[in-house]
Length: 239
Image 1 (cartoon, rainbow, N blue to C red):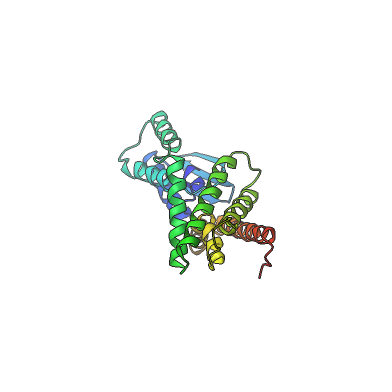
Image 2 (cartoon, rainbow, N blue to C red; image 1 turned 90 degrees about the vertical axis):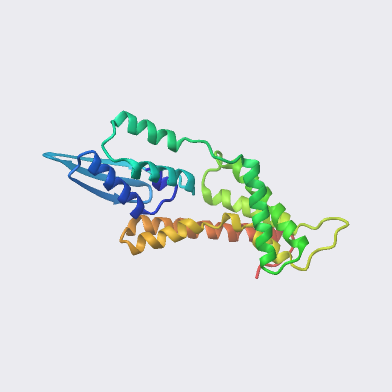
C-alpha cells in the first residue's frame, strides 16, 4: 500500500510482496491492482485469506519507496509480524531529509535553469524561479486542505505563471515571458505517474495503469487551465 502511495510501479510492488510472502510461508499470492485499492489473496496450506486495502493519495516519494525496497530485499528469514509492522510503519512515517524551504529554493533554481535551457534571458529565468518557488509554497500550504489535486494544481499553476509574467514597475519586460511562464510550472508536471502508467500498461496491470494515466492527464489539464487563468488576468489571449 505504501509503495503504491509513493507511486511505485506495480511490478516492483508485486515482486516485493511475493518475496515477503515466501518468507512468511505463503504458498500462493495473487494480487489485483486498482487505482485506489489493492486486493491480495494468500494461500498457506489449507487456509486462504483475501484482503482489500485502500490506497491513499499518491505522491512521488522515492526516499520512502527506496527504503521499503531495501528493507524487504534485506530480509533473509521470516521476521516477527510485530517487528515487521513496526519497521514498515517507521519507514512510511519517516521525516523528509530536507526542510521545505530547502526544497522550495532548489525547485525555483531548477525551473529557472530550465528556462535558461529553453533559450530565455536571465530576467526570464529569475521570474520563472520566483514563480515556481511561490507556487510550491502555496502547494505546501494547501496540500492538507485542498479538496483535490486537480484544483490545487490549477491554483499553483495560475500563481506561478502569473508571477513569472507580472509587470514589475521600473523593470523592463523580458521578451521571453512566455518561456518564463512555461518553465515556472514544470514542477507540477506529473512525469513519474506518466512513466509508471505506461510501464504498468506494458506489464499487463491495465486497471491501475488507466487510473494513473487519467489522473496524470487531468493534472496536465489543470496546469493548462492555470496558465489560461494567468494569461487572461494579464490581458493576453491564449493561443
